[in-house]
Image 1 (spheres, rainbow, N blue to C red):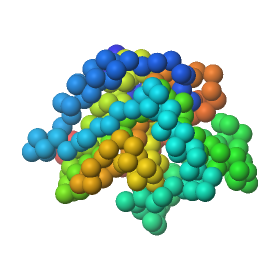
Image 2 (image 1 turned 30 degrees about the vertical axis):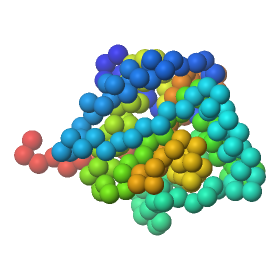
Image 3 (image 1 turned 90 degrees about the vertical axis):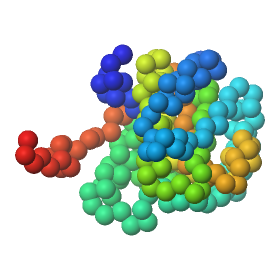
Image 4 (image 1 turned 45 degrees about the horizontal axis):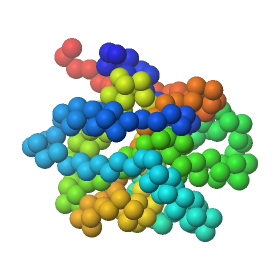
Length: 223
């Protein structure tokens, strides 16, 4: 698969089959992804991989906590800026509306939206989960490196016929995640990522989010 094909076919998968993904496949993806760019070769990423019975046990733990804590236990960073300005605010609003439209959940259906939000914490049925953490001493440049590493994993997953769901939503369960996988105090949880085979029949997987025209974000000069 070409890089352009991997980029074009990558999407946020919100419904997975229960088809297993082997440890060897995950190791191969991670072994290749570690070649992602890293300023000063710091390689600031830490990955915690969970699957099988351990993943089921973890999801059960979260499910037991959700009724009393539907929005988790807080986050150590703002997933989005507290006050989004345009055009970012409208983009975020539209992709949310487009997603819920695929499963016929209206804006007024608060219960339906909350139920779908809770699916995040089942990894949408993915058989393997990855959690990414970064040392607390790192700064913006190293967070960018972590993002490029995660993007590399998602593109390599496509090469292996797999799909992914990057989930910053997991940041709101940083305490429980940290306790379960053993994230040391000097590291901060950034996000989770489900990986597996997409459910082609799930309508929610038909969503392809919009992208702005080049004219909105590119300025050419001297070329």
